Length: 207
Image (cartoon, rainbow, N blue to C red):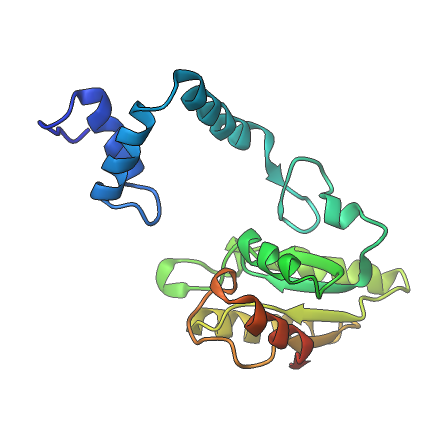
């Protein structure tokens, strides 16, 4: 553990651990650590309990791979969703962004990332085979998926993943569409504003 001579070791350790979180540098971590120090003990304990509960009680849906407290997740289990559509996203955060738009009422499939050979991420590291299996099972049952919407980001890795998915899913009974252009290049869906995402969904195109 790094030694910080300005703080007692307990505070120094907290600052060190907080500074490892996304978007938190040493200065922000220090402010946050001192903020916790000034709060009531029970408030801090409640936060700690919530963090532990997330790790112990939240898992992945065995169908769509979204975060969930039950399996299948509420979206997969809902009879009100359009079961003929599957929207493919990179992460649960992207799923949440599309859900927040209120424009899509189908099902989802979370890939768990994008193909990135330079980072050692290949097809076997993502939830690609499960997606193909979902389509094949529906086609074999005589009730094929009508549309697979590829709602990935616009990074080079995401584009490569889309090309791979189009090849993987062709001939499995579904129309393959993509979000309309207009999304900022290189930006993840979770950071796209609602208006831009709405247009990308409404004017999606054939892949």
